[in-house]
Length: 81
Image (cartoon, rainbow, N blue to C red; front, top):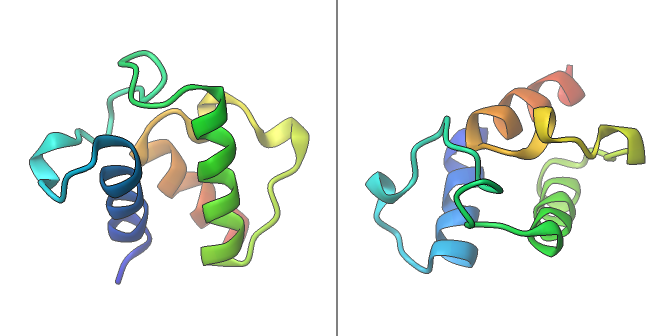
């Protein structure tokens, strides 16, 4: 399963409570549209660290890395090198 599929599945299941893939546009800000709040961001970070074996530093907890599915996928790819 791809990084995108895992991230998308996690967000759909834990924040949107659906498995409908069309319910989540990868480029939409999850913060601006109300899907996630700051606590949700911390939950996503915990998921990323456990699922992908990466560590997210405090300075990496920024919207550019974590506000959309596309940004999260790109962030994980950079972290995994």
